[in-house]
Image 1 (spheres, one colour):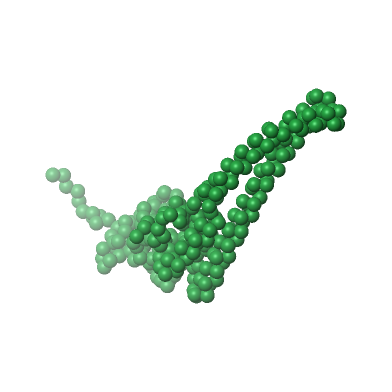
Image 2 (cartoon, rainbow, N blue to C red):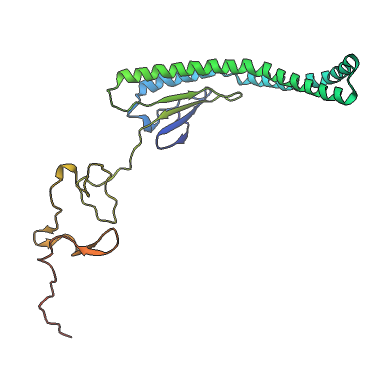
Length: 255
């Protein structure tokens, strides 16, 4: 069993680089609840197979090397011929003939580069279109198999660049808030972050609205007589008539 080659993780997505020379990676833990193991085992080999069909690093290296040689050798070899033709047939002076010969050589260089890059770009574009069509089929399958309103991961694939064997796969994941070990209806002190719950009101669940916070457990106080508000000043808290001062009325005796 191989390990998922996750190159990047963020709050909303995972990015994997798929190499045809390596085993199919396992399903990342972020997608366990949203992608089945069977779907992952079927889709990833399809993605790698389509990507490798339009990715030939050896042939691409030979093609680009040939482009580099032709783009340098042909303009340099034709520069003197172009210069002599301009000087003899058109009657240009030396400076003007040299200037025009260099411009023509530069145009030849750009033409050679385009002749080599345009077929490569068309071939890569056709492969990217195949990947996009495959991803669209997966999204249609997810839309039919999942209930309306549930999270559906968005798949994005990028064909390997020239001389690179890796296909880039990006799958979105739902944004997960940090888990809290406290009950949503628990009253949290000011120094503890309460549970993230949009429906809670000062630590109480919406179902408990209308109830007062408990300040006494039998005859024992749950909190001090004063609490600090958001401005940092002390203010009375709860009903403290039964536990105002346990030493009131007693005489102080030095020992």
